[in-house]
Length: 164
View 1 (cartoon, one colour):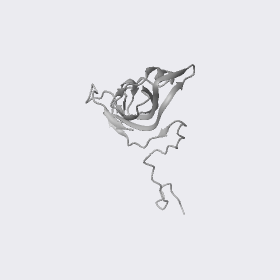
View 2: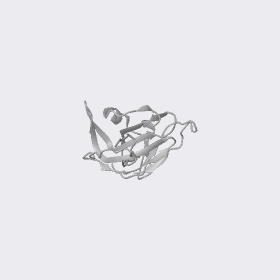
View 3: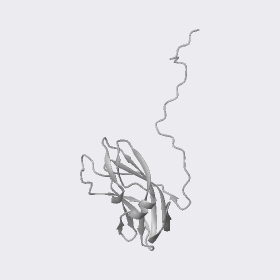
View 4: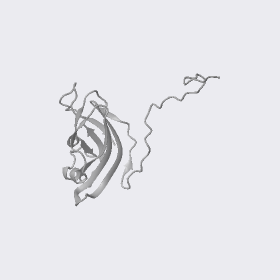
């Protein structure tokens, strides 16, 4: 009997339709978030971890105290469009329980060596932390996310609010 490489009697296994990423441990001071991904323009935001009430942060050369409390948000951004997007971490605002919008704390971002502005290429996915310093008596409730300019929205003036 002659067997061929295309034997129809052999069962075939369909290729997976999703990536199988291994689970990772949540950091000790962090809460894992179960928030549906949200889009702003061609950028998809997936919020995966939150830590609030941090009195200080430590980098390779310094400990930096918060004026109020540090809030750290772990997120994944993915470019779902056909061209690159100029992504700016400084535009991402944390809205607190009293409605105030806070920009990221630049020193904390530098100390923790998190990205600033970067080119998010077609299909590229980047995971990083954002840090804010908000008053001690406030609670973080929303990320006002800005994905960056696109071909159809060159100014990207309207953010997308994502409840934490």
